[in-house]
Length: 64
Image (tube, rainbow, N blue to C red):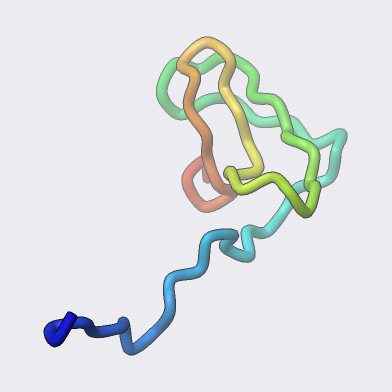
């Protein structure tokens, strides 16, 4: 363990994503179908937007 090191900036496992309103609407940038807003729970570690068809998550920046 002599070569053990840590990151200068620690890894954050739950980024501070900007969360849309629960009634917000947007279309998937990959397939064009409507996205769903995930519930903003403390135990949820994913991104705010979900495409059920692509099975992909997005942030507000990724869909604008």
